[in-house]
Length: 211
Length: 311
Image 1: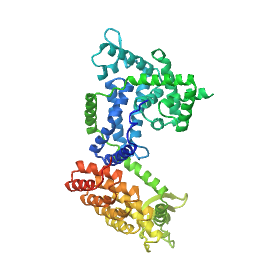
Image 2: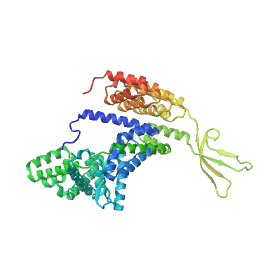
Image 3: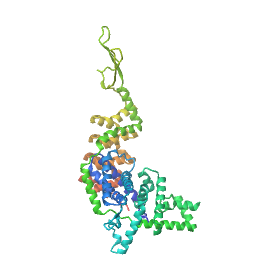
Image 4: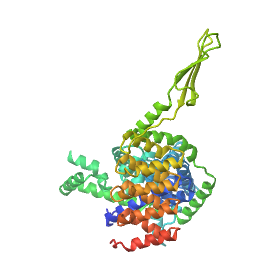
């Protein structure tokens, strides 16, 4: 399980984290005094992760862009009430996960099947496949297999409850600690652990034939 | 039982979420139990399978378009900040009072002194009857801050008015006097007159070892609108940059974002003894790279040049 960052120097990581915190604190205070440039700088620290999360969970660039915009606008309007009781990281993730959960719930109610949609000939395809992937290269067979695998995984993820999906996404694809996931979702680490366990069990059941 | 426990925790193990002792226990068991070893392998394979997919980052185009759209929206967006701050700050201020007994008692003293509810009875003109009877202080002696209630007793022409007043009181004492310290702390944060704030901060700088005084100085450094007061607060905090992280952060913040060049220059001088600290070094690097002030930029570079390299 070669996790990224295992070989990094922890002292340097800690220092970088400390620098980022001070940097963020300064930017937040400036933004709280109405400095828009400071807020935009703050956005740049987090927006790639936010967009990635939104893209994975909504499945379309258009919806991801909407979630991104709503999240940061909400943050901008409410930054005056940010009291440094948690990190800005947790705060912005809390906003974006709430928006994504709303989106997932609405989609479940509407029984939409995105990101798998039908093309002109009635065949289904995964919108995430529209995201270019350099790994596929010029190998059409491998590309096809990858698409099939992607469609199966997306289908399995769609069957999770919004909360299970969120915990799995934050843990598996974003590598967040379950304690942080709990904080973001206003729940305990223990509940986040149970939810992750349930989600992986369901996914393993769904994708049993692929192992 | 052991196998059941292992199966329940294998997911957490694969995600690196098990506590060290539990991880050790699980690894020991897996080394002995073939079934659980197979289960672990299957879980790791499944983890890898899921990781093959959907790790795609948003394209640079999407990111750029999203940023641009957000920037446009921010042009017209208004922060709920101003009114919200008005609504929230008193609550925050009261929260601080909770943790600050000295300030709380100062407010209490002022409250007692100033907000005395006084009954003021007015009688109709009757021969031989007094025109008005008042309880001290009379309205002429103290400013009226508000009327609490006006009632007329049924069947009589007697009116009962309850009102609050603020009267000016005077107190004297040395700087070691608790009451004097409390009033100075109150004045440093709350007075509208910057001259009074300056005087109180100036006196408080002589007692920076008292924690509440240090907090008040940090507050003045961060929020006082008058650069002279901020500079005074900086002077008082200077001796604690080394030992108090909160002071160090406040000085760093002043160095980076204070609008007054004099305050920034003084902050730069104060952090000199702690320039090797990780957070200070980070700030110096940022300043050396992109600060608008040439002086700050060159000072930051000089300080960095004096530091040993970190590998």
